[in-house]
Image (cartoon, rainbow, N blue to C red; front, side):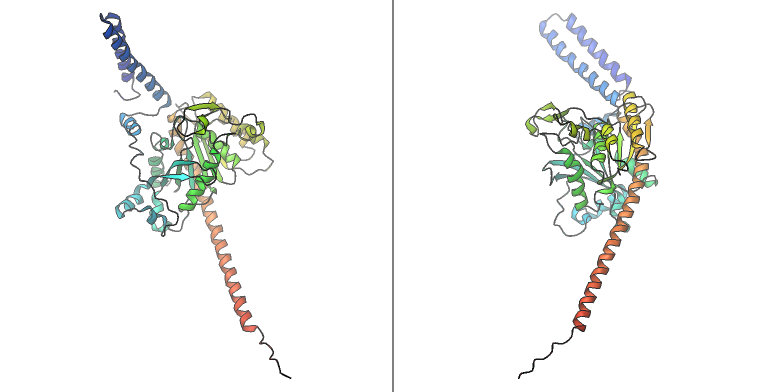
Length: 421
């Protein structure tokens, strides 16, 4: 009855607010008037928070609120050790107990790690989810495809865990064979809840695009049994993350085979960056590209796509929007028309009874995963087949070289003896 989005909660807050205002009017002593006025701010503030929550459809239960605000969903995640230089496979390196590994074969394994960008020098948190199949012996030699999931702003990578419920959604779909096994990679794209960097290499700012599109995928591929960046990787995001996914897919087309934009926009906004680019500093509004119009065009997907050369190869796209948000729907439909010059069938999922909110993003997860994961699995199988063929060719080449060397030693004529005169 009094759940975060329930009408009863809103009525209760209004009644409490009205009672406190009445107290301000009838109180005889100034101290009580001041106290009542101060207390009235509390239900007024909570009413505003509840209204925003109802609009975005983030939390539907108090349990979800508690889990998020106490970080129960992510604070208890195991910290992954640095795997570089350690012997054994990645499961051994993760240090899982037999019990934890048995559980991982049923539910997968979600953990937190820190990725230091070799190119960008950015240091941020990344959440990684290894599916149950990762821990099964029949997948020991399989390199998994991956989806890099990008959050919105304000928000962080934990947004995909709660309230988006991506992991149980994917688990259920894999169990019923509606989705193929895939590794999920969820990086912090902004470096803090107060910032909005839009995954851009902004002029005078941090190289955020380099971190998200290059450093993070390279780290995951190097440390886990995951395909290298390419057609077996996808990038997907919601809201600001949807813009990130579309923009990075077009600017790094060889590093991704698919892209998903959920309620994304297709032209950059102003950034909210930490003052003087110092982590933790107050956010300030900045123009991402200054006066560089060419750089702005290259990072405006709905304009840049029209400037691509004929026959350009780009990742396959999936688009989604809440059906009640006219601006999101119009943007997605317009971008879809341009994409059809490069992709014959561009899925566009308009989620009913949803706007620019979590209801739309949760509603689009299943259609996106059912479309995206088989494509990535097919590309991963092709990549594995090509890698095995290259390995076989290399082994055959080494064998031929060894045989030639051996034959040469056997057939080399003996040196003619020198006769003393």
